[in-house]
Length: 93
Length: 483
Image 1 (cartoon, rainbow over the protein chains, first blue to last red):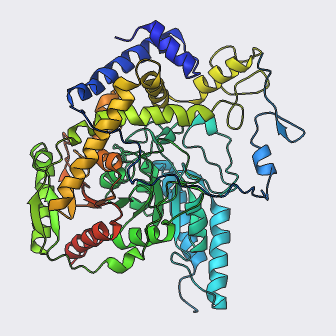
Image 2: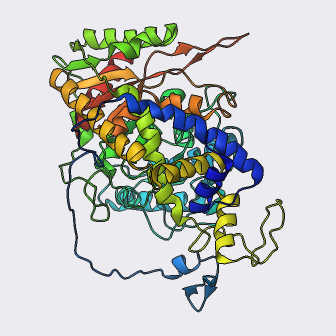
Image 3: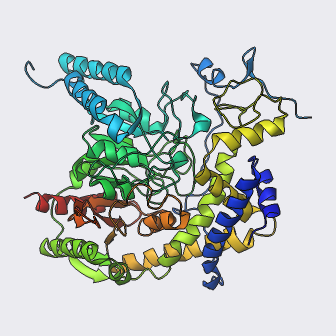
């Protein structure tokens, strides 16, 4: 069983604010799912290389060429807060 | 040309049907009437001027809200993108524009494509057009419902674990997940990047093949888009499948309840009568595909969805915003960290949070080897099963889903039960192979008083990049059924 403290730690790593009842709900939900995925323990994977990609393409690159954006305002308009055409971020410290 | 159908006329016909039906079915999150009519007028002009006509010239369709159309709102059915207007076109959208397609609007879905019923949409559930008390499937439920209810001729969806094929089965339409890499993912909102793939819905296999021809192919903006040749897929629909070896997995059929089993057996008989050879194949590791998925997918999700932080775009919860969130003290000034925490807390729904949390846990220090690395190794074994099976068979036939469409609310509170709805579709994403769902014989549902028949699909999984093979076999069945 995942404790509320563990769930709180994961939530803070994931940057998701949670109430006390959220923590309880997720501790139960995550425990059930993690118990279920643990059935993979029974699979023998000795000598098997992990697979991250299904079609085997490797190192596809392209020239790093700057593209002119015809409609800059379409992006600037999406900033939650904007100043002089820049996205405004709260101070980190 | 006088007296013939115009694109404006056809588009208006669909828009008026959407106007009639959308309040009940809720297939669309947004309807792009002005854009559609402008595109249609342009098509009529091209026809009048004798200009070159594209593959989908003047044909109206819907687009899952996961895919960006420049200047149109794209929410991925999440509150956190409530105010997001796409600043550019996805590659598939650019290609559809070149082929003259008309865009009717954006289709409803489970939030960020996580779910199997559209019940996880932040904006409301889509109803199954065959029975409004039932779900249309998901996550691309709005796409499937829009085609089934004649509110679109075609639709684009995305499929990460079955999100095109499962709703296609539930709504009685054709849905195709191409081989991973066949279609560019550029401009599709990223969910689980090693599994996501865009594909078409349509009423017929031929229409799905035409949409695939329009959207397929290499793209310099998606490094995983494959260099292999694409084709005019509609040219491969010969109806002739004599000598085709179709594999079946015995355990898959043994576990089906009565009516569903009968439906699949009828499909198998049809293929025999068309001259196909039915062979038994084994996919011994496929029973682990769901748990493998529920490690790999949340891990990729936790990374991809880190971008929704209330800073760059989307909804920000802080002291400078008027929001309609009733919950508590949102007028308080917030630090940067509190802005992250609250934007994600109020902007993201439960299922998506559950996946982000699972992925964050599985990737965190001390757990990586036990979960992620292990899942990647079992994934390799599942792919190997397919390589072995394809030595004996050209493609594999399975049911698309274990049941027909379930009732709204039936599985909403039980994540594990909901995950099991994808048991037959998920292996194709894990292995990366193409797969299509085609309506088979309908099945009886568990109606207590008045039972009714619901659509039920079968699935053909092909070899890597053999879309033409599964399209041809799917089309041969459809042709025979319609005779």
